[in-house]
Image (cartoon, rainbow, N blue to C red; front, top):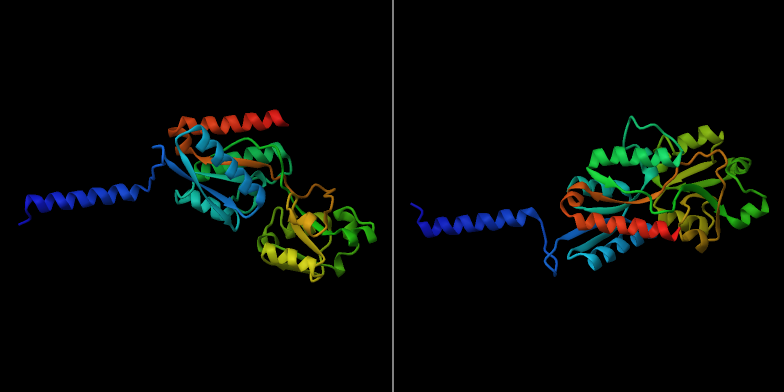
Length: 273
């Protein structure tokens, strides 16, 4: 028969197990420790680090950052598993095969509202208004090649496409809306070869001459590093990718001071425009 002392010890251990299972961590000032997820791109890292500085300056809470995630699917999966509380994401991601019934559009306001609605409902997150810049998807090539052939637009690039090799991330080749399938339909041409690969290998490829054109984000620092020029999308094919901060609804609802930090940041950025 179990003694009272043993029963007490078993109950105490169970209590510790339950508390540990909640996963909450306490900050040095007695607040919570939240977690922000960030993809590899530099602007996303800057956004979440800016949020971390503000949260830790204006509240008793702290923010841990998990960065260099391969892409947004890993961030959304983190929200689903309650591993992330904050992140920096882009409105155009709403067309990347997450939802079957989303209506494709290149209108910035419509794209933003759809991202707020669909991602908000699916992942129980609050998608804040844009930070004030876009990081659109597009196609770029070596400036020297474009100047030599007087090519400035994606339409003009079509004249040379059947002799060019495209490097892109694997997802773009398979996507319907703003992917390669849609691109071929809109612009009426395809490249001699289209290769899916890691982004880092893509930039190495165009630098060493193995690739002729690459898909890029328009604020990639590699554009300057490798002397690339983004071609003008005159047919308005690529959707807008407006940057926004997002937060788990349960965090915003429970901690008013966190919502105040987001509001302050957006107001400050609006005044700087």
